[in-house]
Image (cartoon, rainbow, N blue to C red):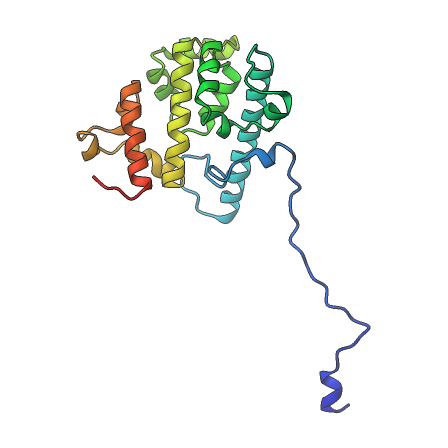
Length: 220
């Protein structure tokens, strides 16, 4: 065998190209916007690749369930804003951008199953939620036990906090960093903690404005 023989490829052997195995998305997976993809659901730091993948999968699963709950709520109501095709494509992220639809859902009331899912994608504890909704822990527990629908005043606050979380995760990238920002006195907000300002609508608007400033690199 000479050196030329070594350079000749064996036609009988073909290089096997290994393609990564991709998970086939369902129709609902395609509804997930890039805004929230990849964010950690856990409030703890992700310190390994496997944990990051697990948290991302968990987040996607919650978002899919939220899409389904939203579809169930709207399709069972008297809303006349969308046809069936448009409604089937509506994701929870799209919903947060549709203020008119949000108003109608607030009037109808957020059912507990939807609230429970929203809880899982926000950096707020059960105690935080009870405080924001001005409900006792026992009252909040009864909503869960009886699978109740929240009143309009509570539904509005639930969706406000979901809206703030959407923007906060977009700006900071994960729940832990966002929660740290919420708990830190902010000069632009009169040295108040953003977390405390979220208790009323005017404060929520101030927090959102500051998050937008940060997103665009406008530092106060």
